[in-house]
Amino acid sequence: MRDFAFPGRSPAVSTNGMAATSVPAATLAALDVLRAGGNALDAAVAAVAVLCVVEPASTGIGGDCFCLYAPAGQPVVALNGSGRAPAAATIDWYEQQGIRAMVNTSPHAVTVPGAISAWETLLEAHGTKGLDELLRPAIGFAEHGFPVGARVSVDWSESVAKLEAGGATPFLPPRAMGDIFHQPALAETLKAIARNGSRAFYEGPVAAGMVATLRARGGLHTEADFAAGRTAAHFVDPIHTGFRGREIWQCPPNGSGLITLMLLGILRGWDPAPDGPLGVTRLHRHIEAARLVYRDRDAFLADPDQVEVPVERLMSAGYLDSLRHLIRDDIAMPVMPLPGEAALPQHKDTVYLSVVDRDGNACSFINSLFEGFGSGIFAPGSGVMLQNRGLSFNLERGHPNCIAPNKRPMHTIIPGMVTENGRAVMPYGVMGGHFQPMGQTLFLSNFFDYGLDIQESLDLARIFPRLGRVQAERSIPLEVIDRLSRLGHGVDIMDKPHGGGQAIWIDHRRGVLIGGSDPRKDGMALGY
Image 1 (tube, rainbow, N blue to C red):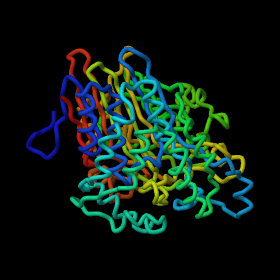
Image 2 (cartoon, rainbow, N blue to C red):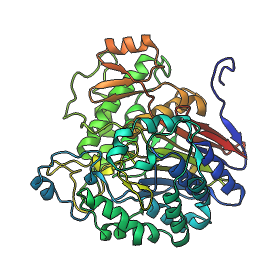
Image 3 (cartoon, rainbow, N blue to C red):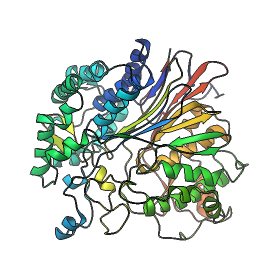
Image 4 (cartoon, rainbow, N blue to C red):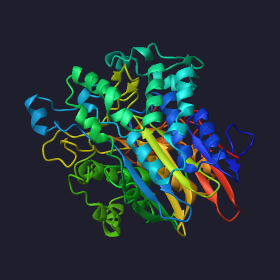
């Protein structure tokens, strides 16, 4: 239990249902659905739709999503809601144009959004309510306005140049905390989706407007690409591994949940480090293990519909043991044993939420535009901000993640789920772009290895190895940074924190839900 003499917050506790999101309005929207008889998935869709309005730098209906859902007493199911490249996006075309790298504000970085397809697919399979009802809170915020939150305002202010380049004039100038912001065009698009489902987004005037906006900037997208995106979301077999007596579940590639499981597979070969959760040994081991698995991410992770991803080999005990044996407690690896991390752009903008209902259904849900405001390309007629997920494609011919027609890029957003004895015990997630596997494993280790409560496990200071350096939050003690440096790590103190997370622990024995929400965002966990 935390020391109440110091700043902080306690976990939320309830019995009937709980939601944890990154903005209070979304948490309340989810609870309203639960109290009206909806299940966890219904509540998650209502909440994420609100976030797509009130947290516009991080997410939107022009983005993608992934979901892990654990119906009470049933196996975990996974939904891949990531979009595809246009049918004309061949590596031949990019080479002929002399394009050697993706640009974050280019139409070529825009993949067909998968979120609306995913929401509809999930609700048809596991929901009890329709989009007509669940989109009402989001429509209200878009139409009547919402007060901008503190973290939202900060993220907004960092994207001025992108918004200018993308023609997103309604978002300029950035809004300050407490300013009321309206999105009337987005409200009309959400109303159309509420009436007519995903067809209203992927076909007709909304789709035509997005295509026209992209093609005017040189994009290869067609209305046929968007029409195909309506049914692109699909259920996939989740992957999992054991950790400290529980099973940790992830979506399979093209998402990077595989990297979380690999990292846990290395860490479970050690007992918890004796110097504690912010001890140098603990952090050093975690850094070194992450360097190794992120190297493999950049070498192997891609769309399994188009290339082979050796999931079983990468998760095998023998392979992970061999990686662990490369790590020494007394010195950092001076060089990686294979080609190192790819120079993918850094970003920290995504939303993640957890919901558990009175019946024990558990939902782990993540939705994102990738970078802040995605590509910055704004379709004015529909009010849709378009993602830049294609930025993660590689333009090296022959690379597994090389761009290709109708291909999904390597994806960073990953929902997580923990089960114990076949039952869900915790939907959880840590957003933050490439940081997410590192963030998830830090959180899980804080909780299961060091006995921190769910809120403390989210609060604790974070580090991340990135492009040959270690990025440390300012709350990492200076003596720890000094000792990491002596081991050979180049440490940089970051101005902004790493990511943000939510989690809900299901205490089946006592019939209680215990939730946490990351202070790095403006959200909250709340139950009833």
